Length: 193
Image (tube, rainbow, N blue to C red; front, side, top):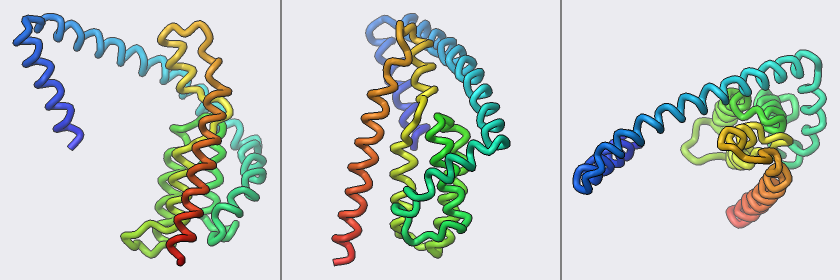
């Protein structure tokens, strides 16, 4: 479906460029967009390599275990039906720790593993369990101490102060998380009634 949407947008752009006599501008925009995309990806690649290395050091140095132990009480409240020793809980905690450190890409495999384990616990039913919904919400809100990707994007676009968005990102992420958790809790209560 997504390929069809992209193809439709490209066809419309070419037709509009042809009708308006700006086909050369469309071609120029395509070339500039491709060049900017490559530059952006290479810039992000360096930062991601750096943070992946830091994450590896943090994991081997015990920092991840420490952060995980700090997150356990929170996860116990949010995932009451999961035992703290279950593999799903371990994957959830590691995903949350990786997101907290701004390692969204490193968190993705952990998130997929957590969801797979939660699905197994759910018995492969078509309806998502409470834990699955809660995990998707937490993963989506993704509170980050340092939102590295957004800072990098701002820096690449020439921002004078790319890091000034940290406080607003924290506030919005926490607000989204709180509203989401409360919504899930309210819907769960309503569903039980």
